[in-house]
Amino acid sequence: MSTPSLKVVVAITSPIAFHELKNQSILQSCLDTASKFVALYGANSHLAVAGTKDDLLHVSDIDCEKIQCNPNNAHELAQSLSNARSSELIMIHDSQRPLTTAAQFDRVMGALTSSIDAVRPVSAFTETLKSIGADQHIEGTIDRNSMKRISTPELIRYNAVDIEGSSSTWFVPIKADAQIATVDADPESARINSEKEIKLMKHLLA
Image (cartoon, rainbow, N blue to C red; front, side, top):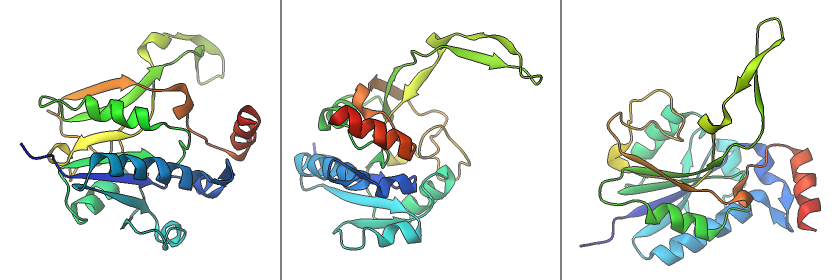
């Protein structure tokens, strides 16, 4: 049985990706991890970057497939993937998660059995959550056991992508009958959302 073809996409989801952490850009750290996984997977895989026209200018010197779109728009990313180089498996990694380990990539891939169409890493939500009413008064506490933190990479069989779908909690719309699995996310795969969080991360890594 042949190994299915794989496209590993690093999605540039914010300008924060171009800020520096660990002596290189956050984006470059993500690309390095994705590239290592592509190399381990073998010849039937390739690296891609998805981003706006302006964002892709920052990676013009990188030898990989470029997918021009807004990767924060699930429908637009799905449409762009349908017009890009074909692959049986699509793995999408958020450019804001520079400390994600290769082990997490492996864990996601390992969970894609013959009966599963899509996999992503999740972790427990540990903070206390309150619901706030229209008058800004606290109405109650939300059961955090019903909440999960979502991480990346997401791994999806291309034939499970709903190309015409409009929105999704995944990077791309997933068909309604797709079989989904989750794996444990590592704490270090947390998303960096702001310059303040970059400063905090630098302090923690020092």
